[in-house]
Length: 466
Image (cartoon, rainbow, N blue to C red):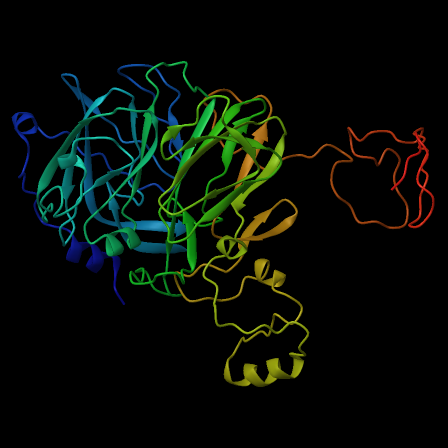
């Protein structure tokens, strides 16, 4: 068994040499590299220099601190092995930045001059590509094409000015298949220079990524092309994905980038939204289009906005049904309608504790807590106020509440539905005022309907027909 200590010790360099630093970077000391081990969503980092903006809330993540050196905003990323909790009960041995996968969100403003130090503590060379940014060719981060590789122990510096606002990403362009499969990625947010431009009350961001980790193991299978078994947001699977906490009436933005191997239709319950951002930046005002589901292809970024005016606990998820499950067995047979009673007794004699299931469906998997190998998540999991949620993977909850203050992101618990607003079992009678609030009263509506059968005489002027 590969232990955490063996994994980290085998992959971490004992010392970090400073090399290949540009002239301006060489003259200054390298900023301290902050690190994060907590798996929960951290408080947004308010700007302390430059134009004002409403800071990003990175789902199950955090924002990298920076320092000002003259007119340069400086960050320090460290590429290194990390241990990431996918959800309670399972951890993965990944590669990432500054203690986590994905790495910290880089948050900036249009027009900023950024200097990003990148230190390599991996056992092989790496680089960073600033996905979607316009910058000098030599800063684009493609190993062999635009720069030499960042060797283990080296620190490189990237310097460029941010020329447009939008939602971007960073990831390696060195041994990319392996390094992306190991979790190396992060968000890069550029706010508009005008503090009032495109402002919202709550601004969330997360990346879509996926892993193939066999039950009871810790390392991803990096050569998997399509058959992944863990579909994650910011390297977290439900019930490990935090909820989106918003106040009733808040204008909310969600920014999503896709670094998996397939597309993901992201769907929100209870609200419609406008798609306001793409890979190219913000959609011009007046050109945003309404949706309840937005499909995000590989390598794409999308931003969408809505007014959270419907209180409740609303599902947010990928609409590919297998992407809202955890490590399912793709070779498991379908037993719906089969009689498994005799089979269970026979198998239990040789496999103690065996329970036959699946003959009536798979919903029972969400509520049964069966023994599993260590470091393995159940296929469906999570409980709420009405029982098992029967979800996994790319699933979270939008919690809309009245009376939240602007900076309040504390989980308020489950929504208390007003009396008469919960679906109920029908027992032959209807309670008074059972009609849903806001439904039109049609009890006094009259309609004059006349039917003209095929072959009959044409309708006279003014006659209605089907």
